[in-house]
Length: 266
Image (cartoon, rainbow, N blue to C red; front, side, top):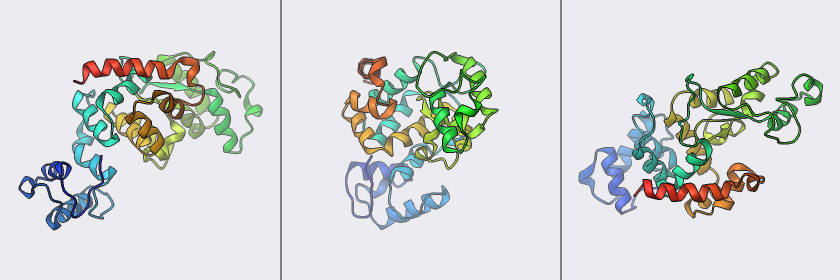
């Protein structure tokens, strides 16, 4: 993705004109282009500055976003790759490792989640609740150090989430990873959502919503975005999955999934 403004030229300006319905304007970002951009931004609740940055590109590429409710198709991967300055196979690799060959939703229609008790411990503490004071009887959802011992998987992760919500809903929702790209709830602001409630609501709408929120999260972290673009899987794994990524071979699995993606997106 390239930020475009008046006097820019090239193929991406040509692409912009096509998206704006101005194919006759050619390869030069002129005054008519700026006017059309401002009109589009105004109609789509974007910052009206006449500059085509990430959110304007996102809105242009996914202008039918709110009406889409199906599973992702290959075209969505290519669009996200454009926004993240990477290839579609790299986007696919992250999805493949985070949620396998399945989608972003369970059979019940709820988004895929994984609840993390050590994160819940920290989230409660930041809200002025002493985790130790409510740990008794909640040892399966509240502990200081990461462990996969209490994972139930699938639909049963919601048993753990609801148990945590009974203590503090926002802290609980912030302590689960959500959707097909498994972004933690506490990252909601990095995904463009002011509240974790809004984040969960969108994660619960569609796979495309899940993809869009996850892309915003990656785009907002320049080191993460560069690592993905350069296929530096160790750096990406550390930034996306945390410093313990080596314990589950996250970087190796990403590299393998990328090779699978290359065969898919060629």
